[in-house]
Amino acid sequence: MLDVENKRMADSLANKVTRLKSLALDIDKDADEQNRYLDGMDSDFMSVTGLLTGSVKRFSTITRSGRDNRKLLCSVSAGLIVVFFILYYLVSKAGT
Image (cartoon, rainbow, N blue to C red; front, side):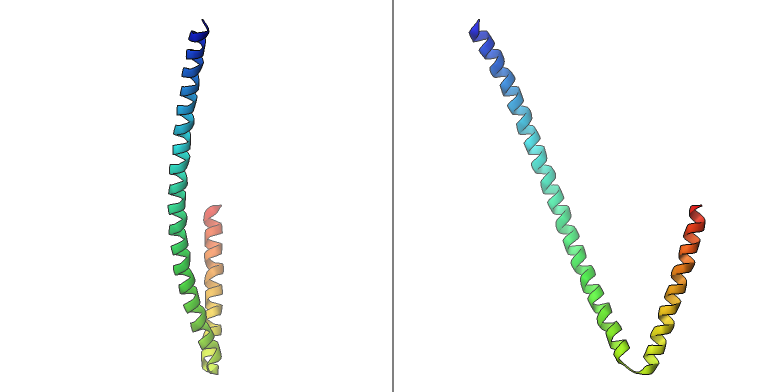
């Protein structure tokens, strides 16, 4: 009688251990996938950082150069701001 109960409890414990092992392997697989995803994001951010650094250097060169470039820079900046507000207006109208 005790032997049968012990065997039943041992089988129950073995099933629980099997489920926990499966769960642990699933967690490990998920963590590996997330690490690969984050590594990919890291390389993407590094490339964007390089692009932004180059843009800031070019912007600084333009602002340090003569007066004609400053006029051009102001005109381009004003144009970009106007385009931004036009796009904002169009997107807000499309949303309603």
